[in-house]
View 1 (tube, rainbow, N blue to C red):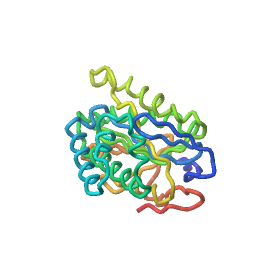
View 2: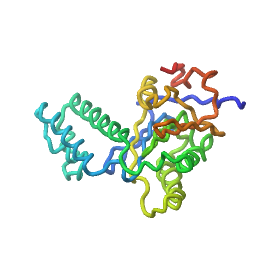
View 3: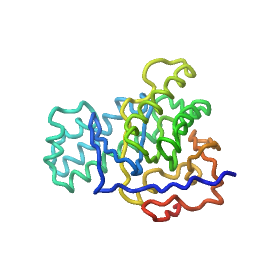
View 4: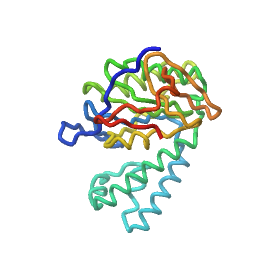
Length: 257
């Protein structure tokens, strides 16, 4: 077996250069900092699910006496005064809002709405191979998991080209290969991924849950694939029984939960 790659995954550095952009979602990017990225199929959050998420967030906003239109701006049509609404919140409320919206988003994804074609081994492998293609060159993968309708990954980019790699190399390329396999055309992935710069070692444990059999799989060149009954595909070449430690962030060794 090949030796695992010797890569240090770093937490967000407040003193280093950071790039920020925003479409419907905020995007923070820092070269050399580990990022948690989620991208999902276009049918993964149908309208009725988005409405439910909006109502749940509205209920929370109402109990806090905060503007309930924030919910529709987050999960519906983004309002022109979206930024002003968020800026009107005190820091603690803004942080709690983002945490709750994040939770609603990921819980809804894990309910596996839509056609869930990533359950199919050949389709899941297309997504995985796209992610692995430039690993060790343009970026370093810590771990990733292919769910029935979305993908999670922890990755660290080596250059600022990382901003386009997810959309171009991962999503657009894999969609071109997936659509003929499922006899579809048009957008396969929802166009805007969710991303988060990891700020502490403990976040690695929180960001990719232990789906299915409780193992957290790590990425590398050659692929070992497991498809469990829930249709969750994980990819690794490591012998997990012999590798019980996570890679370090800022020199700290992270034990698996």
